[in-house]
Every structure is written in structure tokens, then in C-alpha cells.
Amino acid sequence: MTGTTAPRETATSDILGALIVVSRRGVADARTANLSLSMTDQSILGFIVDNPGCRSVDIAQAYRLNRSTVSRQLAGLVSLGVVREVADAAGRGRPLELTETGQAAYDEAIGILHGIVSRQLDGWSDAEVARFARDLQRFNVGRTGETRPRHPLETRVGSHENAPQGTSEEKEQQ
Image 1 (spheres, rainbow, N blue to C red):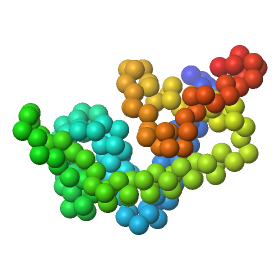
Image 2 (tube, helix red, strand yellow):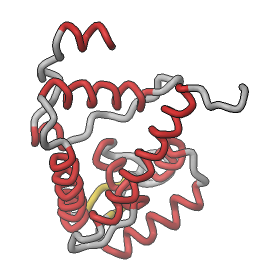
Image 3 (cartoon, rainbow, N blue to C red):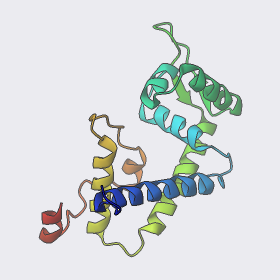
Image 4 (tube, one colour):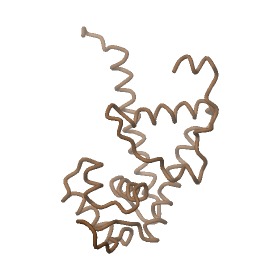
């Protein structure tokens, strides 16, 4: 490359910057919940919600973390009373589940984050919101094809799968 930055590199940097801002705002705003959960805590609780009966090793593998790191995080969540291990005679490790307090804290944090996203989307058309959702899902699948299960909030708030697919002009731009 010469002295100028290619448009794709500029756009990629802009996307990264926007994702960082979204993450920071989300964590800061979710801390207003009754039980302050870090981004890591929220991620772990979300994984447990999305993967009932998962074990600490599953979390470590999914997030590419050392098992001891996950164990420390889980110990903190257990001491907060938001996660518990379920007795299970089969296999190594114990299945994890949220306690009632954990489910309430998770739901509250997700509710706060959902509200933030909804406010940010004020003024967007249904087609624009649907396109943005599809683009983010495509982005999250990535090159490896790894996906995370649909978030349970979608069943409570309404899935965007049946949302308007945009105008024919928008479809051509896809």
C-alpha cells in the first residue's frame, strides 16, 4: 500500500472501533443492574443459558480460555450465588446451571442491553434493522462456520427471521 489507506481497511477499522464502543457502553450500562456483572460474567452466564448442562471445559473451549481461568470465574459466580454445579455421576466435571438469582441477574442485564440497542435503533426502518441483524449474524459466524445458538431473548422479544427483508434495491446491494 502507498501512503493512503485502502477503503476496506478504513471500513474495517471503523467497524472495530464501533464494536469496541458498543462493548464498553454495554458493560458500563449493564453495571447499573442490581447485581453488577462484568462482561466476562455476562458472557459465561449467557453461555450457560444457551448451552444447558454445559461444563466448565465447554466454556473454556468455546471462548478459547485456559480451564483454570474459567474455574476462577466460575468460583466467583458460585460465591455470588448466580451459578451452581449440578450433581451428575456421568463424565468429568459437573453440569452448570443458573440459580434463580443468576437467571434474574442475567435477565436484568439482557433487558438493560436490549433497551440500549432498541434506543440506538430508533429512527431505523424495520428493513434496516433486519439487514443489520443479518449482517451481524453473518459476521459472527466468521470463517470457521462456528456459531453461537440464537439468544433466548429472541423468543421473548420476537425473532427477526420473519422481519421485512428490505427493498429490491437493498437486496441488490447485499
